[in-house]
Length: 317
Image (cartoon, rainbow, N blue to C red; front, top):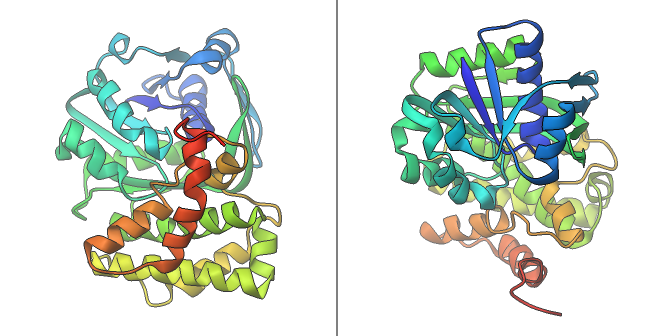
């Protein structure tokens, strides 16, 4: 199997690194190529990819990496690890990687990536997907996995079982990654979306880690309300979320490390462009499509928008 990892940040670097380690040490029929850029790419070319992980540190000393997808040619699968707001541009750039049998697996926060990629590449090439992990680029060529049990899930958007999804799941499993093909990937994506949009938006506004947000009754109630709004939107879009999804997600938050923060939260605090439009903004937008009001997400989105516009050079203050 030939796999391209498009985007080598915390997500692509960790999960792609596990696949590359399997290819280097155990499976000569597996080929992994990274699509990266800048100093991160240079470091990977010179020194390989180092990953420090709660599941065991490793270093793939030689990796195939490029900033030119056309130099790779068609592959069997593309793992998309860019930020959610980068997906449309990435979809156009990855066209040389996509042949008649290629399938693309987005692992972004949010629920927009599959439709965005399908519009560019054709819906027959796109699966739904998600991941759970706290990881980041610690330095060029160096990824740090700092929290959560790394997990990937993906499947056909129409709910059917497919050989290609099972084949990729088996490869991830052999690489030491908890991977699954859920019965309904749309439900799985919205379960993740409900969690990440709430903790990202509330965390960015409060500047507080998970441990503080869940302990204070006031912020815990805000988290609950944010998840309830997202669940209402999901059900309006015919996504069959369980009735206990909010309580289940709160229990998940209760088990996060005390100092855990979301990537969108960190980006906003540090003045970088973030996934605000794809998270809180998407809850508001998708709600309005079905006539569902989401006042808390609208407040979170509106409150954070000035900082987002400043990070993108659209406002100066």
